[in-house]
Image (cartoon, rainbow, N blue to C red; front, side, top):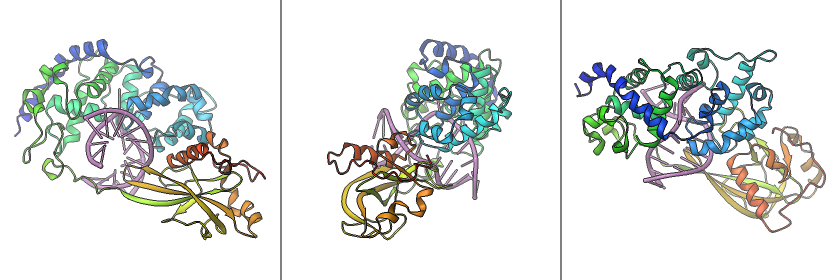
Length: 402
DNA sequence: AATACGGGGAA
DNA sequence: TTCCCAGTATT
């Protein structure tokens, strides 16, 4: 039995004693964030979705613009998914945006007034809202208690209660412990926010500032003196103070290094660019990328044999862009192409153009592009060569899929 | 229980 | 470089 186990049962009083100092600290030091100035469930909902796996600093750049564009759940429900995706461009995890849009349609319940979920369970039935987000929205918007367990609260609570990481039943214990903060609690919403704030500001993963922590004197990990050293092999790791990699801590080995995928993107020597939406179920679904295909590379003079640009000829290599995803890299060779002899008409009137979108560089500003496509567009616009800055000559089918 | 999902910031 | 982040859904 680890030192923590026999004490956990007596921990009901621990949170009660820590609560006042925690809230006092929060009142004194909490950051002024836009979603903390409201009790509007919609505003809090949007913030919680954006904040999934995304830092406050990044979300701040998106949140206000999103709320201006879609001030109410009805506005969001009515909006085109393309505009929602455009507003999300660069935030990542685009499934969040699609789920948010779909869930808005459910809540807005047009016609008629919105039907707001009245409990954690009801929130959790909406797509994109799991137990933790449901708890956060509910507790913050109604100031009634519900536990949460995001990365911050997980770390704070794990340390506070001395729950070893990488052990069986860890998750259940963490949820139970997190729920303990709701005991006899006059300010449920602020408590959850304070716990998240504590994890974000002081109770950091690698170097917690225990000296400044308002609840350090009640903290199980402090009592054990474990905040000063890393977990060593053979003993349960207390909450991650820089866990060593490997199996010693019960964690999975780190994944193999990122591979590099190669691709070509094709830019017509004259006329607009061709964008294609990424297919259903694929990474970055629905976002537009500059037309092309996977390839180790093409050389000037070669005739393209694949896809829509089949029968076009490579004129020159313009430049390359690279992009890093979580699990791989992508290297994209951007090639200038012209229709091969006799293909000029077919090239424009191609069958696939119906489901693909042509857009000038300037028009592409309004489209939801992948990170790679955005880099290509930016680079093309910065080119001084006037031949590269093409404009529409013979307007092809209207931009689509955007 | 493991894995996919993106991107940016920080150490 | 590597790690981390106000997680969820799927398998």
